[in-house]
Length: 435
Image (tube, rainbow, N blue to C red; front, side, top):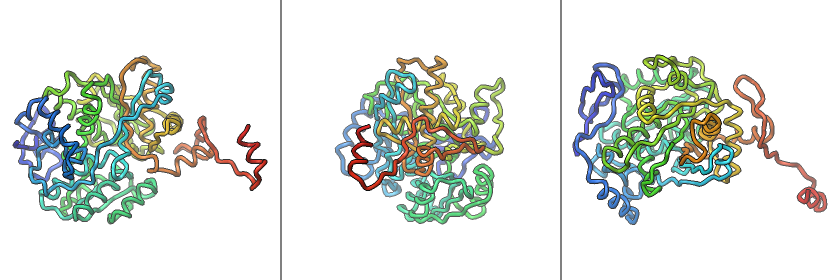
């Protein structure tokens, strides 16, 4: 199936070869996306094919991304694919979280089960495949954590040199440790995410480095398969809502694209509604969505949140995200640091656990049900983007009443579980446990 790059902007729609190293349209500056002019096979045939691959031992079939390769046919050579068996992440029922969120039922699609512990792996396997196809030797990203961990792992596995740029002092150590362990050359820049991204884009052009941030259209191709896998796991029964956290908004763009393409292919009968949840201190997309004029995003110059994965004030994918949320009849909400922390603790009480940014989903659901935007009996899938061990310091500080918001205000441990120091004495411990 032929593939090409096409400008996202309706006023332009310029087309470019799939081998062009571009992240924005050279004509109008708009974002670009992968496009496949030919329709895939009939829906019933695709469903049967994807199901049959579950019994295969081929690495490409064991990948929860490449198993659906008929929807991402930009690479035809299997030897250009580096897979760590990404995807294959579960749907987990969470009755206690549902009750907290004001729902009768709630299911989490937990991307923290990926090889490096986040949804970034779904996109990174595709981004690295394109880097290999283009003959690149070095790849780079700007990251507050998850992207750097994922890129480092996939680049190293593929024999490429990963270079990571991170905001100095603004990364969870659980994520930084992964980038270091996977061999990334790591540069801590004294600037925020958005400033560093502008810097790295200039450096990439000068040094011939392939960028793997979410403006890379092939990252989006991999991440859209999260929705395909979700639908297959649900027996192709469509949810009413898909709720996810919003940072750089690549996932929102990817989910919307995947859902639209499944609709066009006859795999689903309609679009579910997308709800994007942002941290209150880093919520430019929330402001844009609820503004009278949606033509321009006003960046947050100094974004603030402890949920570092969504601490982004100038998200590059906002035009795509706006289209996808609007077309789905969805919405955007914002939540406080306190709301995120409490929601995270509730998710933990379900035996699931997640990184702070992921918990924004449940915090947002609680607000949206209270406002009657989401009905209590709605069929809702909430996406957890990262593993619970991505930021263990956050967890410890919350449960020991030491967690503070970026402005210094204390965050109350409403669902705290403080460890107790006891003497080495049987009777004392028995008395304590019998209380």
